[in-house]
Image 1 (cartoon, one colour):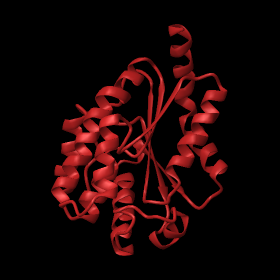
Image 2 (tube, rainbow, N blue to C red):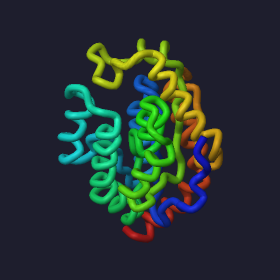
Image 3 (cartoon, one colour):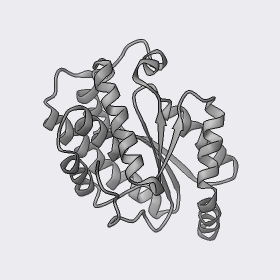
Length: 223
């Protein structure tokens, strides 16, 4: 289990939320529903994803998810390369402008997939992401928890390279996410992913409520 990221504070401006969980957990659905709710309040929202939130990232995503076998260390480096470019060109500029950034996957996915599931050193995988993003961490990480067998039925009909891994692999991924949340509960919101999507979105919004007033004030002052 990794220690909390006590030396790394979230950005001073904007609001950065990462949605994490195994394949089929419903991360993109939650990002969409929360974005719609926040936009309904008049807030500026940027929704993005990893890998593939940039043109460079889209090329990396193709290799990672739709290519042939990728060695575990190469896989970790490719995810970190995508994250470095994504943080520098999308996430940090949006936060600096005071936006709410909702990201489908961030560095915890690397710790869970390449660390817990591939067997690489967890601390090294996380440090690679911290170096790539210059220490960027979310204000809140939402972990959508679902067991591997249930998640299979929630996925698309054509699984990608990582989705085709064994149930044991995906259970290790799940355990990796839960261990991260247990070690640093102040940064995480763990939700049962099989709950109705709108109930989940309401729970995320409730967790964000204390910070949304300041975000709205900052965005209003900047406009």
